[in-house]
Image 1: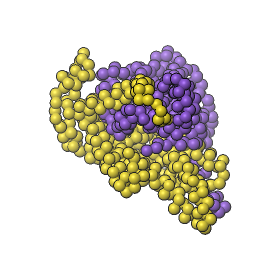
Image 2: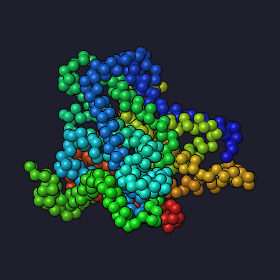
Image 3: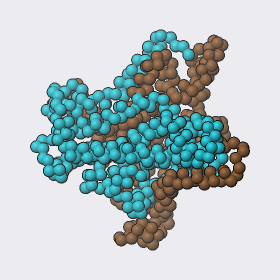
Image 4: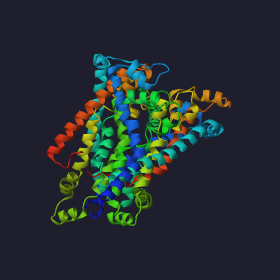
Length: 287
Length: 316
């Protein structure tokens, strides 16, 4: 399709403006995180602070015993969660990719129903806390969001379309077991979809705060992922003071405003590196 | 991966046994985290209380009495409920409309730009907000809306307008929430639609051009019809969640501020508050059941209608 030069120029201007709009809040936060507290008093959160200061980041390093712990927890959670999710999703997708699998219909129903119907918050909460005893455990951050019906369908479609039947048939003739075919043939041929789903789940876990809010008590700061630390900082100005009391390191005057913004920047950074990888977001599901 | 015809039945059977074994962990996850809570919905018909020293099952079946539809009656008698439902449906319909019109328009426009580099950078930039958590987004909006330090209030003061206490002014919140929602998700939907546009057979455009079709005609008769299927799936999915909202948007971005609840409280926030603040299990469960049930029924109806209109449009 051809469009005239002037139309293209107008279109480009629109997308440049929209792109700038997408980035503006992030740039603002980054600038605020390196603004001095004095500047914030006089100018507020501004693109052009009076003076700059790295106090917030220095404070973060001084309090690494606490922030560092949550940071590490978030990384471990992200890694474990991604591996667990990929295992659960890919095995199920592999099984369902067999068109002549005896329980194919049953399996499809099994994963489709929860996509549209759930037990609701109250029942889920009661079961997780009172039946499984997940309150205040690492498992509660890891398990409830480990699987996703949507990704199973996406991956099943990929397996069906991209793995030649002949390759699988030949391996079966050679006596390869069903599990062997999965690990030695299907998985190596499915790197693109594994990477895509893996990164999406990784972001999922990195961004997770909801389960911490529901299932982690406020006195179990050792189980706070970094996202939940930021939430707590917003919720409660006394939060850092309490953390000080716990870690024993008392700082006279915490740069609380810029510190919050610095934690926000820390949470955004990995996303900035990962999100350009999703340009070809062709996650589709055949009927 | 279909097996070829020469495979005997017994091989198939043993293969299926292995397949079931391979899928066991995932099946167990589904039973534990999706299906068991569904049975927990019984709570909606009980006055649930935790019996000290006893487990969930005992508390539910022995310790809590049946109350029939009392929880539901309580729900409908609650004057707040109608406001909350109205808010939820309002936001969902606005989002549904905007999430279809804007991203389709933007993706068609972007596909017209010839520079590959420009398109790639645009997509990468517009996806970024989608991958941020609501806690982070709440921190970003706060930088603009904070009463004493926010960018907007300082700008207002600069031109001599009295600062506004944003987190205490309900009237502005529909706009703020709609804008925040768009900021976070328009890029994602744009990239999604763009991936469907790029899968259109190029020869369709070539032959249309040969016949002297204008660009606007090609968009109207080739590109847009091609997007009908995915757009109708989006409609079905949204209507199936008509009483559900993105909890993070309505809880985190509003900072759970009490004085704007009349404009911001949706069913999910309401259920959360009833459960966490009041430990009201029966009430929350009843609201959840209603939310899920209505969504499900609507999903099936819309799916049926769209399927009747065009079998390509349905979801299932």
